[in-house]
Image 1 (tube, protein in one colour):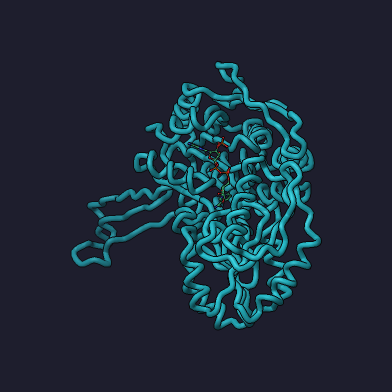
Image 2 (cartoon, rainbow, N blue to C red):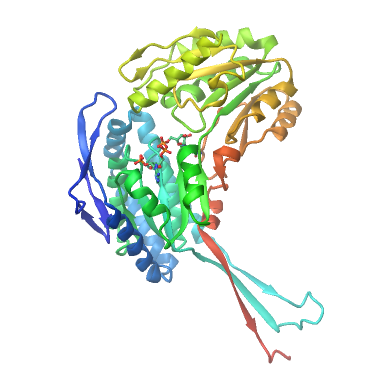
Length: 471
Ligand code: NAP
């Protein structure tokens, strides 16, 4: 399968004829190629979107809805094929790949519905003394910002692009989309359907290529009105530096803590923690990446986690670098005296899951985002210490609190410096209508359904100054 650039609604190879070969993480087999845009093609993509904005911004909402609904219909007929491609490209099991496509289409549908019910506001000034009734009437409505640059990561190429692109388009913005190199084949197939559904020329441009060549061209282009990025904190920090004050929606890394108190249902906690930590090999921003457990129940929880880990089926890591990094962190913990309960073996890029206890703040696993199948456990002596350790994190995406005591759950949740606290459940982005976002190194801005429609638009006030309103 060969993905092209989409510029002005045309599927194009790069003028440079450069391509990026795509290899499957399952077995290293070549499965396709991507066009590698050069700098002038990246620039052109933004200019084409800026040109298209001039008319798309004044299009009828009902027309935008009709096109996005048509794309939804076309894609709904292709779910198994898209899921199969996603599976082969990012080594997600078929059920998870299918669920990603399905939830993305559900989000698209919900966004269309939410946009139908968007309301403006009107204002009267006569609550203020000296302003006569009817003298100043104001209409307040929302309108598109301009060109939205959407950049997504490898782990959810469809879900983490549709949650940017659907609200952007429906609010009258045009889009330049740069997917992660890994996952771009499926993204190309998915977004091609939007062109087939009738998006006008230039409204959605699709660009792949080397980030070191075209990244800054896109990020610093003066015609970009908003950058919506999901990816690592490292790249997010780079975007903050170079983006010239353009508004940013950043969804970055996470180090989601699971606090397990003495009042927890330990069976429930163990099964949520295991599924939270190891699904898709822990390559999820909201994976449970550190357990803070009260000493009195630690042994029992660890036993339960250990036995649930026997059932796990892993898929290969996304690449050798990711697997090497996880092993480096495990080695560091070993060197510093952590207790290795299960050390996962490695075959190629397939890492079996590891469970490590007695992690201390001096170990890299305490602070760094492992993004892989290793679960570090920290023993804490009190609620205060659990909260203190959790808040020492440079990240602030989600945290989980496991306890049957609602008073305790709320008290702890209230003190955690994160965007979302899950009570008795694993970290999760979904359901996608929920507000979602991180603080500190995990990003900025809460996205969601209505939230994203707001973020992808600006308020515009028109004041009617009326002089003859005497009755
Ligand atoms: P990444 O390396 O930061 O890449 C993310 C995207 O940025 C990719 O499209 C990448 O393109 C692009 N990119 C890299 N360097 C760039 C540059 N200089 N200029 C412009 N674009 C650039 O992240 P990843 O490895 O794909 O994803 C894993 C990370 O994403 C983890 O840290 C995870 O926690 C985070 N994440 C966060 C959330 C959330 O909602 N908070 C959700 C999912 C993932 P190339 O691939 O072509 O380099």
